[in-house]
Image 1 (cartoon, rainbow, N blue to C red):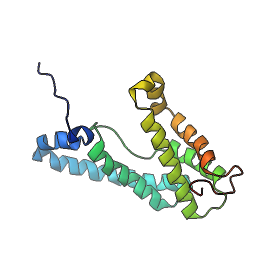
Image 2 (image 1 turned 60 degrees about the vertical axis):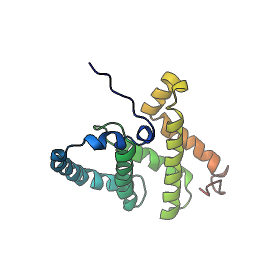
Image 3 (image 1 turned 45 degrees about the vertical axis):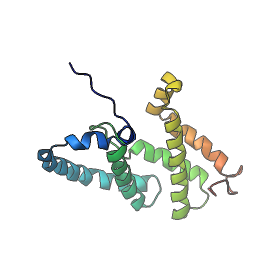
Length: 168
């Protein structure tokens, strides 16, 4: 059996460069149908989850489309679902209501984006092999979100009324 070759250079960072040349045009029709069907379910669901998180519904639109477009370029699994979940929405809502004094949509979007960025940094850091099992467990658990909330305390003022680094 022939051992698969490891991607090199730019295709190691952008996996689509590795598999796109072998994509068969006969798959396109079914892939488009699958994409439209998925979008018909995921987009309204993500918009509802944004409202559940206390954010404007258009944030759900972005949260459903942008990660999927990025995953097309950077993802390595054909069967992975990249979308918003009700658990993340409820956790985000609880953080936003506890940390944002006003209900101004712009402040909520900024705080939600800051939370997402902090969680993303934590998840990125936990993927390194030195993290071992705790790092892999961290990725699979809600610990990333919980730690992101605690990091949010450092980025807001001590009394949560004075602005912190990101004016959250």
